[in-house]
Length: 125
Image (tube, rainbow, N blue to C red; front, side, top):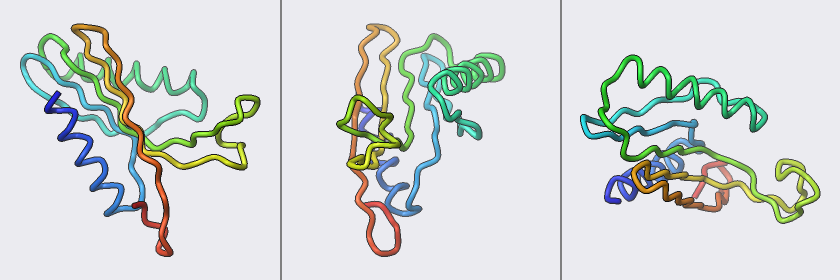
């Protein structure tokens, strides 16, 4: 999972440098690697699933990554502890940088989370 460590470090650096992290997908296969910036990442879970499917279809059509090995989604999100409301509406929510990993071969999933704490310049750290 060396690729996951590299992508995690890059994601943290981008978050620190830019103060945000645009949603992106890293697709790693036997013939190569592709990263896709998700220009659209829906407001609801259903919309996000459709956007991810479209991104996957584009990678499959335009790039030959070979047999899939890893799919990694990096994005920002709200996390809450109150299960009766959406995290974005939880007054005690926290901002987070998420790295979702799917090992396609084993179907093992991994979620790496970092709480985002903003300084006076609104940069994450």
